Image (cartoon, rainbow, N blue to C red; front, side, top):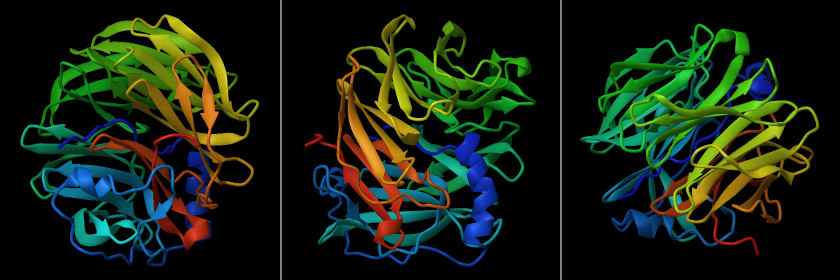
Length: 393
């Protein structure tokens, strides 16, 4: 069993997040839109289930008419694979639904097994392994808070807790060699808050940026000895990166990624090379850009353009490289590329069409060792669509 809490979606802040807030009700309304899925039983091996996805091929895994609300997260147990979805049922009713991922003739399919939590507007659902199961965290846009819940066997939620933190995208990661932590804004201050394996605050809090810097859109990823965090500074327009130790103290940084207007930054840690890779949309000129640092935040690869007309980037690490995905800013097609650690970009042909009302329903995640992309495809009857990255041929 492996669950890599590498990357999850989806950005509630910035231009795209603003589009969501304005357009979600206007264009989507409050009717029931949900999954209508099924499929044969799986074979009990989660690796064999997700491995059924063909290489570099988009596969629809349900029958359409979907409306996930910024929350798609695979969770792997020894004999079951699940997909958690924050699903739009009605205005201000977004339960986190649990779907069994099962073997199907086309590759995999989803089967609804019910809600595990009731929320108003849960976004950026994140799950991380913990003692006795998992800890789930999500941002509640309704009141600008972050919530945690313990997930036991069968992905049953218990013991929920609330934190006055907003904006984490996603908010949860486990420090290498340490414990779980949340990132977010508390009265305008960017902080990292330690939590235990029940999702309860430990009392450790580290400040990364004061309100005067205008921090926004923070997220973080585990490194071998702590955490790497990235956020947008609205004061300078730059992305800023910090390294934290396992005890959540600051080890290095912040350093800047010199883009004109950092928007929706994402971060990856490549363990084999001990490299930090950040991707971001530059809203001042358009396109997605990347840069690479070593494990002390010394620059390795300067700013490098990944795609000239792209937005809402996502990134995951894969052995000795990374994968980057985005929405094409002109066609809203799903685009992706292999990004090597020397800055080389190998782009694949675009596929499908990401939701036109809220064009950021795509996630990247390492699931049972496989780099997986998932998005809501308008061109396929609003079906959830998955792809396993293998090459760019």
